[in-house]
Image (cartoon, rainbow, N blue to C red; front, side):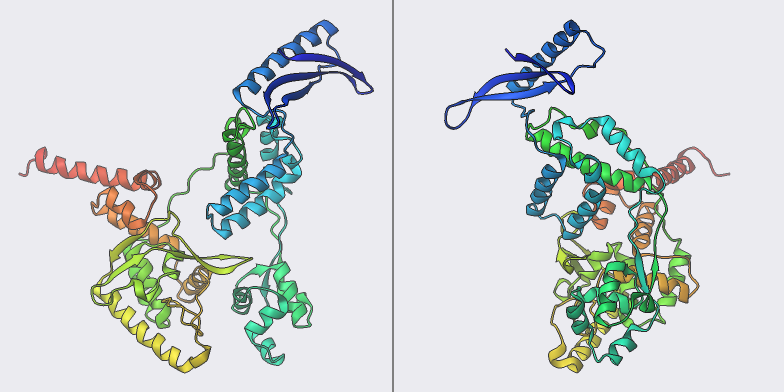
Length: 461
């Protein structure tokens, strides 16, 4: 039975609840403690009655195995959970995203003990995130000067600049190509070149409130941490599971009509071969951007047109470009058309010629899409290139993922069974495909039913 000890101090009356249960490795009995503080307006009899009830509940939970008197804070335990995720092979870019989310979460609930976190605390936090001014203003920088000319003026290569600035080589490449980088990276580059940041870069700050989707990301991470605590019996329940985060609507997948794809492919004919091949591959495979960026020559049969997708390229600020598993960890194979094989053969010959010209400077990485020295390309480059490509050719806004949705649309509309569509796209399960493309599936069903009616009900005159 729990023991109850009344305590009176300068902060009022409280009750120390103690429960003896279990033994340490030494054989000594373990005592568990909890403090209960009643409202100041309660009578002593009412307060003691409630303290006794709290003691009974505490004892019940302790006997179930919950470590309810543990003093771990959310911040301490979250660090442990992130460590678990790292050992489980979670991508570095995902771990970096967790760190950014925790930079908002920890100031709000990081100091709280795990057992003290309630749904109301989380709901208040989510509401605060959605208010204007809650966004952490991380400035973005875009080169306003010709960084290539600056490198020549200082007699530096990109590799040397990356070492001087202590940045990943791909960050330097992005800056030179006019791709947005962080203000912190821009400051390092400017300092390495002996210039003021404002002279070389345009700085922009986003002051808009956080989106529902971003708030939901915070909720999911909190839920992941508390779910692990629940599994390890450090808390009796996951408070995030009882909270009320925003529920943003899933956006309708953007996809192109066939006529638009024809226009895009025609425009790509005017681009360098490497980019033409990427546009062709993303059109006929429906693969993810990183999966195509990570495609290697030894995964392509240039005779049969069979390709195997078994990895992807990713980018993180700490590691730069790195290779990892596909999003679902699954491998898949598919056959590309003869026209694509012809383009791939041309690119293979072109790359061999580039390799010979570079000599010792060439890095034999085996990737299909490489920089001039054979190093892999940052997968984010493709999104930026497509933005510029669409502007140059006066096309509607395009991005790599839109081709993925287009592939799904074409397959479903032409009667391909949903299991096959799921395997082609590399989804974790058929359920993912069904939920994401539900409206297309319903349209295909309606068309199928119309066909059935035409054949069996509507008689031809």
